[in-house]
Length: 65
Image 1 (tube, helix red, strand yellow):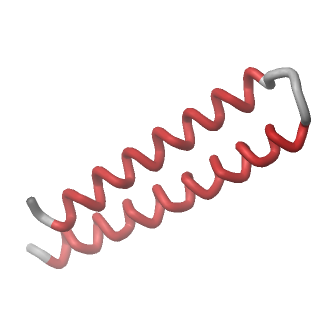
Image 2 (cartoon, one colour):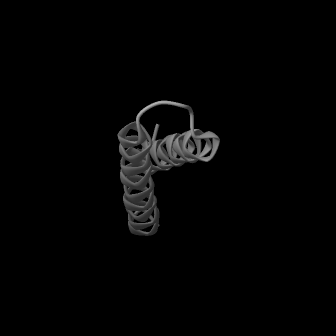
């Protein structure tokens, strides 16, 4: 398995984590508000990691050509 493919898989998994966090924030469960903020921050972090891994995927893929 190529290293660039691993970066692509991790990018997709991180983006799915972002989508799960967005779904959680949109439903806004009853309870303390800081839990929603915490999940929102985790979602933004997973979105940034997704972008980072996708950039690494593109770099590794272009370098292997």
